Every structure is written in C-alpha cells, then in structure tokens.
Image 1 (cartoon, rainbow, N blue to C red):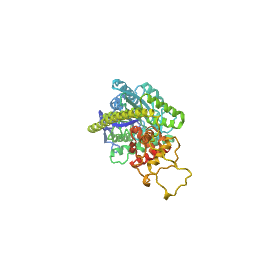
Image 2 (spheres, helix red, strand yellow):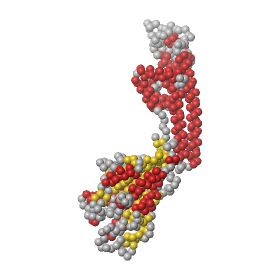
Image 3 (tube, rainbow, N blue to C red):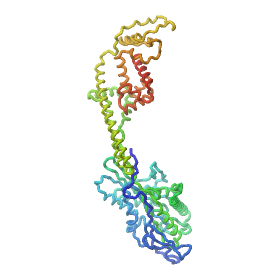
Image 4 (cartoon, helix red, strand yellow):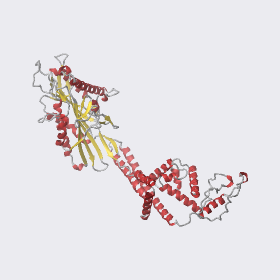
Length: 619
C-alpha cells in the first residue's frame, strides 16, 4: 500500500506567477493590401505598444515577462522561457508550456518548429533527457520517462498515439489529479525513441487549409511527458513530475477565414473553448469567484493545473503585425495581460511504500479448507502438529514470530516516513517518534511474554500426551444404587431431593465404568434451588474439572470457526471475535481471558463454563 504525501519544494517558492512571453511574428511574404505597415511594435525586451483603434494617434502599451521581436530565434525562446522550469519536473513537480494566439500567428511553429529550427517541444524533451543523464548515480534514485499525446477536436479527447481510439473521458481522483482513462502511455528511453513515436502521432493531428493559413490546426494538441524517480533504499519514496506541452488552436474570425460546413463547426468549438479559457482567467483574477469554470470545457479541464493549479507555467502569446490581424492581436494581448496576474502553487507529490502485514488471512483460509475437505487434511494437520512437537516448537510461537516483527517493521517505516516530512512542526514530529519508539518497546516485551507462554503450552501438551493412559475420571466415592426402571414415578409433592454430591457421584461412577450416561438420571441442586453458581464446581472432582477446562482452553486456542461454534453459548459472531482476538493477542493463557472478548461479561462467562463442563460430562 502507498501513502500519498505533500512535500514543499525547498528550492522553489511556494507560489509562482504564470510567466507570460509575447512573440511577434515577422511579416508574411505577401504584402499588406493597404501597405499600412505594422500595427504593433516592440519597445524593449519587456514592453511593446499597439495602435489604439479608437484614436490612431495614440498607442496602448503593455508590459510582460519578456518580449520576442521578429528576429528572435527558436533557441532564444527556449533558453529564456522554457528551460528554467524543466528542473522542477525531476523533483516531482508539474510544469506547463502552452502557445496562445490567433490563427496564423505562428503558434505551431513556436511549439514544433522545423528540422533546421526545432521548436519548444523537441528542445524541451531533449533537455529532459539531458537532465536525467546528468544526475549522479550515487544519489540513489532511478528515473523513468514516458509520454502521452492527445488532441481536443470538437470537444472530443482523441489519443494521437492510438488513432483508432474513441472519445476519452476526463476524470479526477481523490488527490485532485486529472486523469484520462484509456490514454496511451508509452515509455521512452532516449530522444530518438521519442521521435519514433512523436512524428507519426503528429501526422494524426487534425489540420485543414483556410484563407488565412495554408495548414491550420483544427484542434488543441497536448503532449504529456511524465518523469518518475524512485528511491532505491527504504522507504522507497517515489516522486512523479509532469510536463505539459500545449499547442492551442487559434481563435478565428469566420468572416475573414471563409469557413463553411465542417470548418465552421470546428472554429465554433475552438472559439468556445478559448472563450471558456478567458472566463477561467477572469475568475482567477477576480479573487471573489465562488466557482472557477474549469469544467465548462475539456481544454480548461486539462489546463486546470497550469492556470491557478500546481504547475510552473509559461504562456507564449504569438501575435501578427499585419493590420488585418489587428483585433485578434489586440484581444490576445489583453488576454496575456490578464494571465500574468495568475498565481500557481506548485508542490511535490510523493508516494511512500509502507510494508503490509504478512498472511494471517491466508493461514485462516488454509485452516478453513482443511476443516471442510474431510479426513485427509485432518490427518495432514495431525502430522504437522506432531512434527512441531518433535521440533520443540508450538504453533503459537511460530505465529507470533511472524506477526509481531511485521508490526514493528510498520512502526519503523512510519517513523522514517515522519522524519522525511518537512512541512510538519519539529516538536510534533519528535513527539510522534517518541510515541512510536514506546510502542515498539511495548511490542518487544509483549513478544517475549508470548514466547514464554508458548513454551508453557508446549510443556503442557507434552505432559498431556504422557498422561493419556490414565483414567479419564477418578471416582473416590461409593456408587449409589440406580432406581429400577419399573418404579412408578412419584408425585411432585412427594419427591425427595437428592443431595448434589450423591447425584453427581452417580454420574461419575457410571462414566468411570465405561457405561453410557443416561440423561434420565438428573442431579438436582440442594435445597431445591436451580441456580447455585458458587457450589457446582466444588461438587466435581478436581482432576475432572481441570481436564474439562483444559479441553475447552485447547478448543479456544486451536479450534477453527466450526469447532468454536460447537461450544455451548458460542455463536458465529463470538467465534469470529475469538479468532480475531487470537490472531492479534495470541493464545488464551487461561479461560478467564475470555472475558476480554466483546460481549462476554462475568455472568455470561460463568454460564458458559457451567454449560460446557456439564455438557462434556454428559457426552
């Protein structure tokens, strides 16, 4: 079993703002129709301005984390914006990079690039492999890398690594992690291995031609790179970091793109999801929204960690300089300005393996099968008991040697787990550790006590086997003459109450002679009282009483569920409680320990002893 922990990253800040970069695409080869020049220009590495459409003599200025001009290379974009967040993935945290902007502004070029100028995705994946290979093996961690690739087309989640798959659902587990059941996850060991899977999957993405773009993306594409590192030594901590690389489809003005039919439906789904993305950003910035509308779109559902979630996020806003893109560029810049105010809270998610108890359940199942299968398993059980007696060991000692160390191992693992927690108060941690050590010491003392009792039980078993030839009951009293069967039964008023000593002596003499006990010969308590709790044991022979108690104690310690239910006043519920108590506490050292069972009061225990001892004498 695994326990999930939340551990703060000691290197990074507890909060991280979304880093927003703006990249201006160069002029296309085709000249502007009106030859009006650019509508937007950069002022420096962080500031730019755009002409105010209400007043052409004024400009609107914007400030961002970084501004990339028309001559910026793919390498510069990667080194300054993407590379700094990648080391967080190897520490079990999430990171996200996504390209935003209108159609035809260069988002796909930024994310994919070309063979000569690769974009963010191939450079980021190569850097992840470089970071893993640079890790020192002496650190004691093993790393594994995997990938998944999907697209959101017309509000359907499609697996690009398995193009024949249907619409996949989006789920959220108890730890608030977003999951996609059925999504292909492929392990990759090198960048060439990644290329082998990624290039064919990219060709599966839905694209089409529009008036503004020869090859326009008609879906949002999301590449997920998962890095899992596992500690070699105990307690085998495991940390999982995820990198989301998102190429969003661009918002479209259908009047300029000339979309019709299926293209019109696609642009409607794209614009709707981007509108929902804008609503999410507005709700996050307001700080007073009762609900963040992540669930209103599948895109925002998958970007839940990237915007206001637990990821280090970078948004690269792509814009075009031409006047025909003016309103799209203006809207993209306003959206980017709102996004830079979003605060994320990245943290490390870690799982720790906790040892589980070995198999008392398996042992009880084997006993159950042995009881239900007949004579052969019973003989096998007798042989095993004889073998254990010859070896000088008892079943109880063997059981406790298995169960108690496993409990101590769990407490030791718990102590290591608490020591690895960095968020908790130090005094509280030390207090918990002291409590765990105290429990370990108590368990060690209890184990030694169980071993001593197990040795005593083994000696008692040997003494019992040596005394099997002795008589089962000793009779020191002269037997009384039994009534003749033809004697007429007297009236109830004329009945003479026999003393208890004499009545029971008849029972003992009859059984000592090997004759069957007749239930018609009933002994009666003295003075006509029906419940005399304090005197019935004193009327029995001590050796008979002790042997009866030993038989009952033997059934309580070794009997299965069926044998326990065979005892008087023990039903199915109490039999299961006895089995559970026996598995946790060990064997009953004395019959009075039965009072510890739930529902067994002192009065019920006395009634239980009386019923079972008298029942044994009556058999």
